[in-house]
Length: 497
Image 1: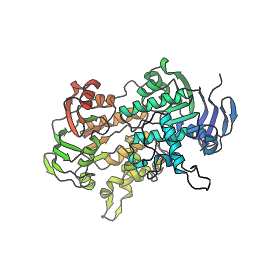
Image 2: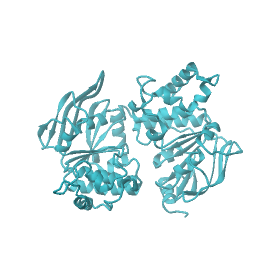
Image 3: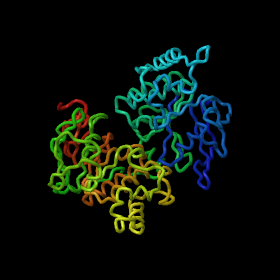
Image 4: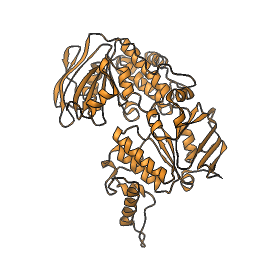
């Protein structure tokens, strides 16, 4: 068989760090092939080699049986390779058409930008993929899902034959994911081969034909999707079987930590009422746009409430900003760890103590380095943060370890309530297991936890009870014995409204 892509014995080192160790990967024409591995396994580096961002130290790349050299991004595009990265990289104030043709706009005979022709071609491309997107609208006015589709159109506009999709569904609702999968099927029909990177196993079994696993920079094996299962793939990824992905010992105590009454923010959420107790993990579930994150941001003081009351340990408090929330013992791990949770170009040490500087001051003037070092070492050890040094920039850590640094930052502030918004988004299964164990230990030690998640297995296996939201309202409060995917989806999609 002549493969659309073959990467043979790819090696890549950065200094003394050997990142890719003889990786092999083969992609058939018109197939969707998953690339699976823990954060730090080498997936991103392999894709950057394919995309011309990095050059391999050794190894061979073949397109349709012909050996090629990819020395730049332009080389990759010339050979029909397109990459859609996890972070959207479109220009927000330009239109869809302008983004598709950015840097290669069609011109008139007089050398002016031919906007009419550009719009016409962009509309044809969008229509060919069956997408309902106005090519004249500005990118900033589109949803994340629509922007993701524009990225696909832009990549296809280069006449690509190989498309890499890196965590394409991380910010999409179930309906938007289904629409993306329909688009992928159309790409396959056009004989475009797709490399699909995702940590969501249910997606892999739904959309891929084969799955290649890499671990610690090494090729582990390739499985046909229909002839494997989650347990086998997890074992290949982590080098061992994960007997218990979820850790939960249930240590609910009848001591109220947080109570909210009739929280309302016009046109966002209305009449929100719930209570969280010491040692309890209260889940919040619902479809994208249900208002879960917005409620948490209001409790944390990031957004202003129109009305309602917040009680901590039985006493009413006024929280008008994040500083007041922290002073009242509330901590929040936001869903956007890179944009809101971390200072990426600073060290593990810097980020870990960022929320607790006030308590580390000597004479209210300078930071006590001995206290600071003690806290940093404590949480790096307790949370098993894998880093070469506490002075390593967090941008260089894997997604799972970045998330642990965010959690460490808030635990250092000694909170009584921890809000976790999508705490395992974009992290691999091994890191997920560690984070679940951390959350369980925190609850077991008496911390009150609110867990917001779009992953129903996570909600069902980790929570004592769950509030289900739809269109800014709590439609149900389910006890642990009532938790099931069917029950949660009933109230998230249409029940009791």
